[in-house]
Image (tube, rainbow, N blue to C red):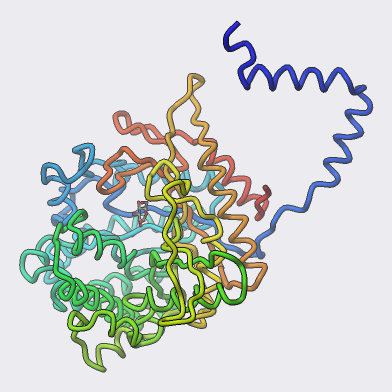
Length: 489
Ligand code: BGC
C-alpha cells in the first residue's frame, strides 16, 4: 500500500518492535539510569533579569486618543503599497485599553521585567513645544500596574515613532534640531517617571531605522538619501542619544540607569581559533563604528572615516563628547549575525565571508539561524569596548503559528530557536560575558512593521479580529526557563 511505510508509520513500528524486545523491568532500569545521566541544565546567574519586550506603535493602537499627535509610522503605514498586507497599527493589539490584561500575561510567564517603549508623539504631539500630560498618563498607569504586579519596567524612549511634525518642519533626523528635541523630550519624561522606572533605553536599533528608513526607503519616513546625507542623519541620531543621556543625568533621579538597545552588526568567527576570533573582533569594531562604536569610544574609527571618505559626517569635538557621554549598560538586540569572519593578513585584517544560499533561516527569510551569535556578540562587545553590563534587549523569532485543531499553537520552531540561542547565551555568561538580563521579543504577536500582521513574533498568539490572546507552547517553554533559571537541551 502506498504510504504504508511512511516515516511516521515506520517510527511507530520501530518503537513497538523495540518495546517488545525489552522487559518492562529492564526498560524501567534503563530509563532511570538515562535520567541519572542527564547533564545538568545550563543555569543562569542568581538575579538574572528575565523579561519580554514590545514597542508602542506595534501594540498600542488608539492613535487618535488623548491628544496623541501623528507619527511618521502613521503616515507611512497609511501610504498605499508600503505595508505587505496593507494594514496599519491604528488598532494593533489595542494595548492602550487592554494593558492590564497584558500585564497579566507577563505575570503568567513569571517574568520579572518588561521592556516597553514610550510614544514620543503621545507626550509631545508636535515633537517639541507644549507637552500633552494625558499622553504621559498612559505610561503612569502602565508603570503602576507593572509595579503592583511585581514586574520591573524598563522603558525605551524611542522605538521609531518620530512625531510627524518634526519630519515636516525640520526633516526629522536629517536635522540636529531633532537631536535636541529628543534630548528635551527625554529629560521631560525621565524627570516624571524615574521615581518608578530605574532603567531607560534611549533609542532602539539606530542601525535598522536609519538604513531602512533613510537609506533604502522601505521603513518610515521612506527616504533614499545619498550616502553622505545618510551618514549625517546617523550622526544626528547618535547625537540625539547623547543629548538624551545628558538630559537624563540632569533631570532624572540620582541612580537612574541609561543605555541604548542596538541591533549590533554581530561578527561571528567562522571557526573558533584565536586568529578568527581576533579578526571578528576587529571587524565588529569597524562595522559598528557609526553607532555603538562612536557612543562607547567618543570617536569614529579611522577605518570608518576613511571608508566614508567625502561622505563622512560633519561633526565637531563637542558633539563627540556629547555622543560619548557615559552610559550604564549596553542593550544588544540579537537575532541573526551580520557576517561570519575569517582572518586576512592584508588590509584591515579580516575577511567577510559570503553566506551560502542554503544557509538555514526561520519563517522570516532575513532571520538566519545562528545561535552562536548569542555567544559572540556579548563576548566581543564586552571585550572591544570594555563594557561591564549588557542586556539582551531583544531576541526571538517569527513562526508560522497556526492554531491547531485542538485550539493550541505548537510553535516548535520558536522553541528550538530560543533553546539554542539561550544555550549559547548561557555559555557566554559562563565564559565571563557580563550579561545581566534577557528580554524576549515579543510578549505577543503585533504589528511587524513593513510585514504588517503577517509575521508573528509573540509568545502569545493574537487574533487580530477578536484581539483574543492565547499562550503558545513557547510561553510554557519560557515560563519553565524563568522558573528554573536555566535552559536544557
Ligand atoms: C525591532 C522590533 C521588531 C523585531 C522583529 C527588531 O528589529 O526592534 O521592533 O519587531 O526586530 O523584526
